[in-house]
View 1 (cartoon, rainbow, N blue to C red):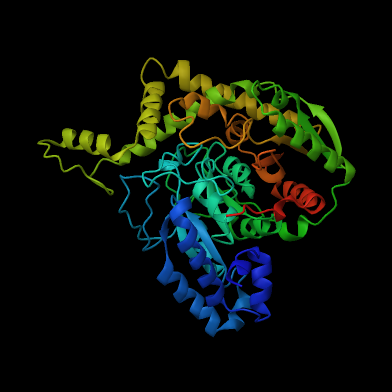
View 2: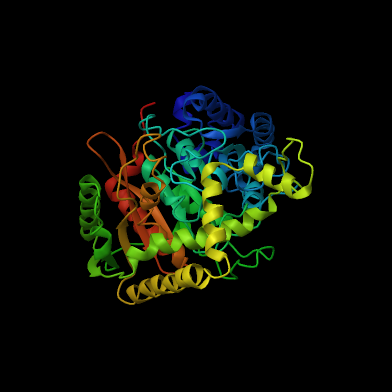
Length: 489
């Protein structure tokens, strides 16, 4: 029974809670038991909130009438460890924030709490969300539930692995250059990056402020829509938050997709080294949409090839500024190596506190922003970013949404790309352009490789058209049944 409970997902669990077929304590205990069994192998969680989760679950067990008032009442949800949680460690996967306990909740966490969600734990991630594999965590790598010798993707790999392995009903991740969509594809789940500004960034520990965006990860589109519904909306605490009405995603996604125009960018299928199994799965998915009455048209996004270069100048530049605050004075770790002056203390703290990937990006970003090189690198990358944004704006004049792969490669082996960071950066080639443009995107499972590894499909939409891409994702999910597959662990 315990294992069966963890297979239900959000909507099914909520239905059974309301019908009193099961209690919130029984649901929470089932997930905690599974975490206790599998987390030592997967390393998906950095912190498990056992006592707090059981206490909150007890409330809904004693007051089941309150479940009707709360859309997530009694539902265990996991949070990526870069979103601040009041009284709970928020490490950002780093040594330098290893013992940081925030005095407040991020807006996303606050909204989930008000909706009745039970915070079951904080998930593993690449240090400060820098990485595509969750191998760059101070707390060790997370493993992919479909093949534990492989990575789950990153930087939200802990959230993706936890959802795929049924360690929680759903999770929140963050996406800077694809960090929700890529791990969702590697772990065979649904993951959504909303339009920049749709979800508040207040309380999200910054990596690259003009790119970071929190979003939902779940085992099906219905659960994803519900989580997005809850965390979306204007927040006066976030100056980049957009005052715009939030549609009813759970209702909008059920509309038919007949006659919708789907753009297929030719540049996304011309990438050298693209795994043939991925291309075959995407082509089959396109046929599914056509069978549902959607029309596909060829489009061009001509500046796609410059996305990786532009991103890896802009994001490190912003990171070098954002991470300047970690100096041993205001937050977390401070070197105790006996330095005699303030500058030495700063240097030793940052030398000992940051991992190699974070140091690499701080150095790249500092160089790109330095006098004499700003125009040549950061300014030029910003110009390329505008061209990529215009590519999408022009494409959406002729199509309603864009269908694309998520990654050119299947989940790779742990350690395989650690000595070749450029190779790892290129695994984000299909997700980076949408992040630079700020448009929404969703990943849904669309197949399995011959060795049984998940393959994801990416649907991109125009600004604030999350409802449209959820509609397409839901129609595909219903027609293909792909999200009903689980790893056998």
